[in-house]
Length: 391
Ligand SMILES: Cc1cc2nc3c(=O)[nH]c(=O)nc-3n(C[C@H](O)[C@H](O)[C@H](O)COP(=O)(O)OP(=O)(O)OC[C@H]3O[C@@H](n4cnc5c(N)ncnc54)[C@H](O)[C@@H]3O)c2cc1C
Image 1 (cartoon, rainbow, N blue to C red):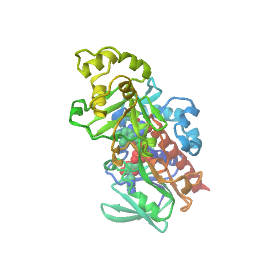
Image 2 (cartoon, rainbow, N blue to C red):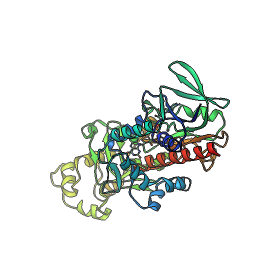
Image 3 (cartoon, rainbow, N blue to C red):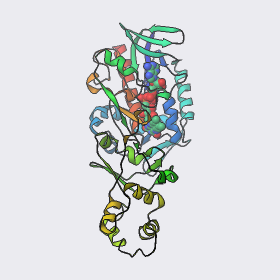
Image 4 (cartoon, protein in one colour):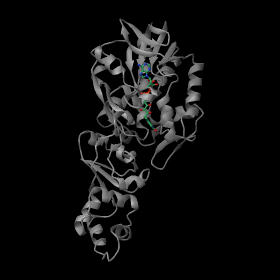
């Protein structure tokens, strides 16, 4: 019997495994996919934003109401620790102009390779192709290529991820298993999600185009980040930041000229249009690019004039169909709630079983906050599980 089982080989599970193995525990990491950390590798496709180099208070504030819960975990394994961890794995890092920290390789595969090699040296065993399906008394039950198997262990860390990008492994099927045992859980909802828009034909030529220098607003939430027009809507960091407000039903509006006041825009629109087409006029008078002009036309046709047009440019409502389907969101909220676990992240209703990573119900924007909290909660759960076993 192994000392510890880790269910889920994403960043949270692998970190829990590392911490427990470093304390001398025998550890098996089980994952239902043929290889581990597929979402982590996917995150590497956009450069692998590991963390954000900013002061502790600002960093924690990004977790909103979950900051108090995550604070001790991030105090123990936060920005500095994440950076040191990557460098110790032979991956030099760099900090971009906004403070975002990436491996210089701008991908996850070399870091993951080095990490798995370290785990191997520590004696961590990987068992892939095994899906955890629940408990039978104190044993864990798995669907495996050889049928149903059960395993016993001193402690277990559950790190099965959230409920998006199911094809990478995080299919959220574990939610009903945990719920059936009456541990408090919440249904999944999208976070860091794009919005769906049924574009009209004239927007087709803008698919893939970035919307630069805009301000996005939803309820009280404001974002100066970028967005990209896609076939099905709008994606990008600027939109992702607004997910909590959009989830609550707020309407999305776009300020197409955030550096000019409404009066300044109205002033520039006093220039006579002459025989210019509306598009040429807007480009010349306001330096609006074709994507922004396309969006304006999408919002309202025919375009109003004068002050009404200035107001529209400064607060263009976008008719969305809501957030993208949950499987396409970068992360999810929901899962195992704070009420279900104690301060050690141990399930109150199942002593010896700990939970880490996106399985837990916390929210954070993109910017490295997700991976940092997954590593931090994995390290926290792993350390607590080791203490529990040795108590
Ligand atoms: C496109 C994309 C880009 C991203 N970019 C970034 C970024 O740059 N920075 C950042 O901070 N975050 C990023 N994220 C988010 C980040 O990848 C996740 O928050 C993180 O991977 C979650 O880690 P985790 O260990 O909790 O779960 P996961 O990484 O989802 O891993 C869970 C593992 O559990 C396994 N599993 C699930 N159910 C079972 C079961 N029943 N039995 C056995 N195994 C199971 C899965 O196969 C999977 O391997 C990105 C996400 C996506 C989709």
